[in-house]
Image 1 (cartoon, rainbow, N blue to C red):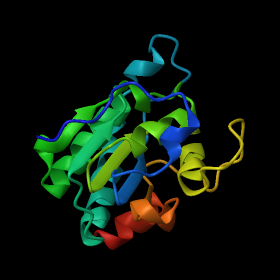
Image 2: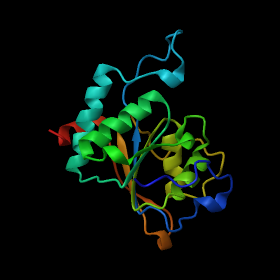
Image 3: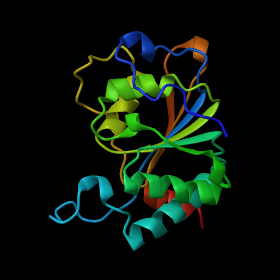
Image 4: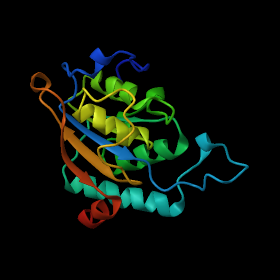
Length: 190
C-alpha cells in the first residue's frame, strides 16, 4: 500500500507550490454524523448515523460512476471521517488504500492542510475530512497566493459531497473541475 508522505503539516508557504505531487485530487467531506450536542459524546467519537452511512455508500457509487480511482485515500482520524473513507474505499474497490493522517483533523489550519496535501507524491488522491478547513483548503489549492488569514471559502462542501481538482505540477495551481453535492452523487450512482 502507498503511504502518505509527511504526517505533519508544513508551516511555510513554499509547501503550497506544486511539485511532483498529485495531479488529481478529490476532497470529500464526511457523511451525516451523530448530533454534536450530545453531552455524553466527545466530538472525536461521533460516528456516522445509519442514514449518513447509507448516503455515503450511495454517494460513493456516484464517485465510481465518475470514474474516481484513487491510488491513496487519506482520512482524518475522527470516527465519522474514517467510516466515510472506509465506505468509499469499499465501493471503489480500494479497501487496502486507506491511511489515517493527523493533519486532516478539523483543528488544522486550512493553509497547512493544503501544503500537506501538496506533499503527497501520488497521482490520484482522495482525502476525507471536515469543514470548514476542507472548504477553505480548496481555496488555497486553487489560489495559493490567497492571504493566510483568508476565511472565505471558494465553495462549501456539504456532507458527503465532493470536489475534484486537477493540476499539472509545472503549470501553476490546481483547477476545480467539479463540485458535486451528495444528492447529485447519489443520483449519479443509481
